[in-house]
Length: 88
Image 1 (cartoon, one colour):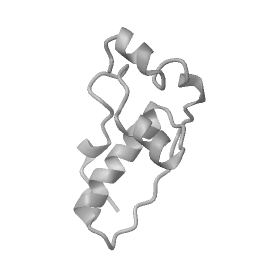
Image 2 (image 1 turned 120 degrees about the horizontal axis):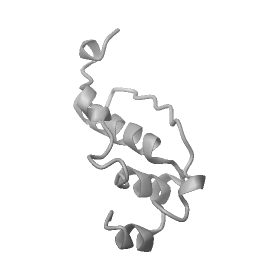
Image 3 (image 1 turned 135 degrees about the vertical axis):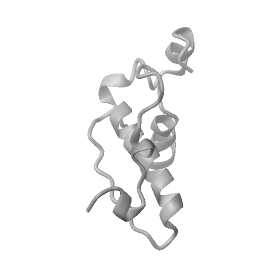
Image 4 (image 1 turned 90 degrees about the horizontal axis):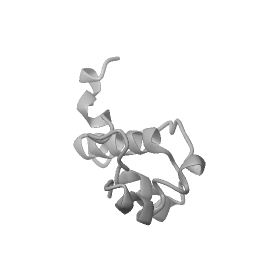
């Protein structure tokens, strides 16, 4: 089964425009769900949210989160670092 057959658009799974920037799904998932995820998982979450909106409330969307945020505690999870590096 391909992306088109289930109504998923490949663009939904593209990471943020700048690879060094923090996708908004990363801190949101930490605050709301206590998920400490890295940038790859943040892109997966963002794409899944867009897909779920299109598929409707009865759809079930399964995510595989490919990385942990433990290596990013001093960078992408640090708002001061993000601002100092003009990434926020």
